[in-house]
Length: 492
Image 1 (cartoon, helix red, strand yellow):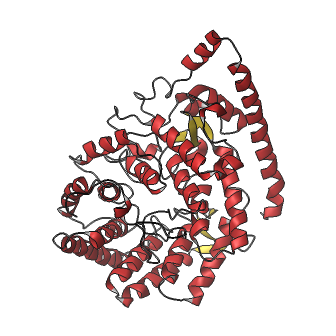
Image 2: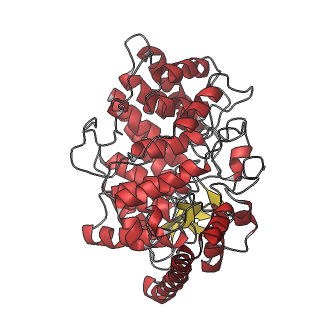
């Protein structure tokens, strides 16, 4: 549907959200003038975490959120009164309005407060509420996509205060991984080890890496989410800064992952999946990064072929934008849609010009510029598109600014008061989520990129920024772990 046709509906939705919030603020102002006894009753009914959250099995921060009828304005106001410990503006939280989320330091701190308020280190299965996928594997609650590792990454990359209880929780679980723990980057042990190294827990990361390197690699999926591409990317990245003693083992394992991914790409049956996380584009990203490490141009040739394989599964929408076909739907998103492919094309073009791929990247871009997206998530929502727009060099600066403002407005429409800060609903808007893939941590990372910080998903080009201490200058390099203030120890 053309953007102009959607704009009135979007503006009406945002007006309704503002009206509800204005009414809520008026009620809160009246409540602050009520007798002390009434104020005490109100505070007793709104604890930092809703009763039963810690012991419940669902991933929502508050049971009322999960059972609510929808994410609209009425639902937002009900959630605010039931789950936020301090929902008033005088608590210092950012306003859940476009202007509030555009005020980067306040927005960051508001999201970080909500994340900290949701932390449940007393639980064994997960530390932060997130998507139900965190209960699917032994490491789901620890994982980069749905668990503590991704949340800690977002806090670290955006300069938010660290969450020490969550770090200790993750370290405790990483010391003795459960039998059958997956090895992948987004779903398993490799992503956990990479994150621990990133936040300065290098000795513990080294211990976990030794366990990973002892595991057989054969029989895994080839992709970025849970297979060779993600594992290879992490090991390649860690090898770059490892000691002379440890780098060879990491590099050899990265080479092995690359060979297995290429074999699956060239000789294996065609994958039914498309895009960054599970498609050929994730393999292309591994090949690009390995080219940056080795200088072997054959890897770039293979990467171009992998990208073209995913592009063959795209088709133009009504407005001419190129989108990934998923069943009967056209997908613009980062995880399995157009924006994820476009991000890898950007990484490729940083090393080698290719007019056809550049044209494809520009054709993919309009899918990220629409006026409305249903979900706020990083992998399947507007946060991921915001992250991509902040980083891509293929977007006109004026279009970029307008689109970033629009996506920030859309995120603000989903923001809900929680724990003295702001949180976001996850997949299908069913309940609040703090994880990277679907929830608040992903929104935090995207808003950081939109503010000009060089943040982003690991191994993809980050948003351009002025010189930052502790940053490297390579076109596809991410910030080095050495920017942490924590003293480093251990190998790897």
